[in-house]
Amino acid sequence: MRFTKVFAVALAAVTVATSAFAGDAIMIKDPYARSAGKAAKTGAAFMMIMNHGTEDDRLVDVKSDVAARVELHTHKENADGVMQMLHVEEGFAIPAGEMHGLQRGGDHVMFMGLNQPFVQGDMIPVTLVFEKAGEVEIEVPVDLERKPEAGAHKH
Image (cartoon, rainbow, N blue to C red):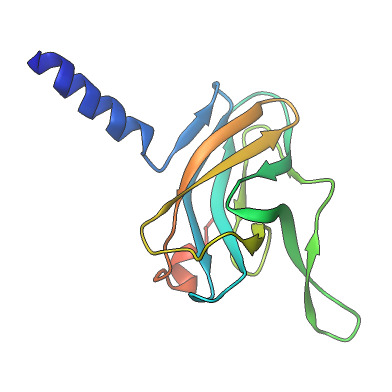
């Protein structure tokens, strides 16, 4: 009986770890989500996506029940020098042997029409959909205290 309890605890710890794998190819590292405040109707998630496979892949969609709409977004400067957030329908390329950062001020997962406010420490279920790796289900911790520089992923 003791082994069963130890095994269950170990399995739970692995399940909620901050890295997730899709087969041998895709690895998700350091995911976190945030919103602007308790009354915010939008939020975003950030993470590093690593493709350890031998084939290029593409993140083509994202799903979650925490908001009315969940999309892949990026920031781009318009002709007037103003930064705009845009839906990226074609998704993000994840070349073989490389990584792609979803980070503040760049590519990210956007939650619009939040069902309830993000609360520090909560876990958000998110499904990332890849062209080749398929669906990757992850738990994204809410971190409302993380400073922008802490979320900047270095390549």
